[in-house]
Image 1 (cartoon, helix red, strand yellow):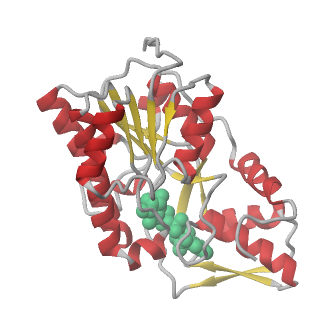
Image 2: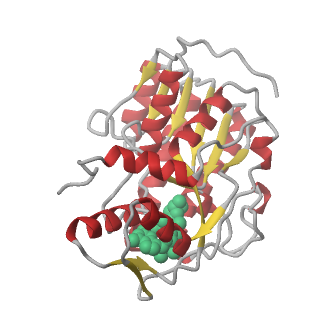
Image 3: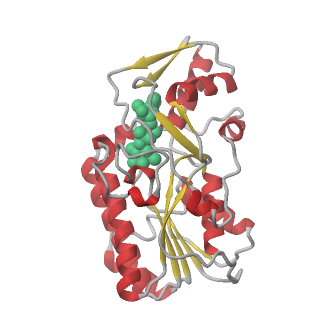
Length: 317
Ligand code: GFB
């Protein structure tokens, strides 16, 4: 693929810049020398409000947009707030994608998630497996919303000649992650539970489910690197998986975290909690053919996150 010259002074809007993904994209753009970066907090711009989003985009006219704003969460949050996960995400993406078209944005990148693929599709998962089978129940509302966003990007590209690219990352972790034990994803949850067990002298850490499901994890800085790589490539405007290419069982993840945090207690598996999708390892060959590859290993990535804990863990005492 050919690199394209993206001016370092190009105006780039990062929607959702305070979240884990949005803040990583902002960091990586700054590292890449991009100086004209546009952001709005939720209080400054409610992406659920169509008129406000359109007025903002038509006034600011960014050349490029990263759509990293969404209502996200782990398996329990997805399965509990099913209505919010589909409504909020549909509204945010519909408003931002449509206003990118109406404001003449040159290229926009829509961020989704690997849960868009069928629960039991062949592994590793290729982009063409989308919509070939039933979804995992626990996160179906979120997945349907994200699939709608992908299809809206395709439809606008077809009807209006826009250049919208959909990027589907695997399970992410890293700076600015969510450590609330009821709404977070598994990796930050196990980091917090293990860290707090160490602090309290507890001799066990509770792990939800059987520990048998497999998950692929990628440090959010790798995703951000892929986003800026795609900005600078003249890619076809379609769907790309973004992953690390390897997965572990939840039990192996918990054991790795115990080892890295030097926790010598035991793991207790709580079978009253759902396992969710048995496995969702992404096939990342379409993106790798363009020349991008993830570079942060799970062990190095977890060490990077826990090093930031030092004496002040990133959750309220
Ligand atoms: O990361 P997680 O919440 O979401 O759960 P998914 C992954 C696996 O970890 C499940 C187990 O099998 C959980 O039962 N697990 C073990 C835990 N202990 C814990 C814990 O303390 N907290 C949590 N949260 N899980 C999400 C989707 O699915 O993947 C989202 O719901 C999104 O929409 C995200 O797509 C990437 O990986 O199952």
